[in-house]
Image (tube, rainbow, N blue to C red; front, side, top):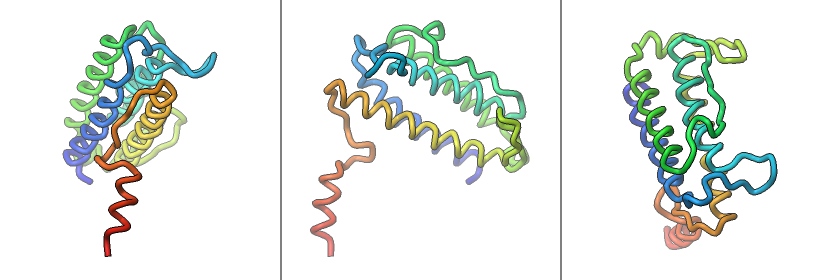
Length: 165
């Protein structure tokens, strides 16, 4: 996948995550299902910081600058959303500026492992999906109705699968 095509795909992945973040009730932004577990806010701050500070930085050949996920980065639903959006915009600008040579070249992960840059960024997508799943689960625990990620519920897919053929 060429860099420009990946950036468009990445924007759509983040847009799906952002739609879930918008469902978090303001009063629940720092809610967690158990003591010493991440809150909604922790997860969203983590997604913002890891995208910009780790994935984007290492993709452009710099060391990781992941800032963590603590409330000092953004507190309150509006500030957390703003942090997510600003970090994403900055990351997209970095990825948009990458040359084809950078894209197919190597970068070094925080663990010191060299990896093809586009493969490293593919890991960013998997990481995003993992945490989006956590947000869905936690919203369910709070009784918040969530939409299907791609337009149909599992039940609707099953029903349509029975009528095909």
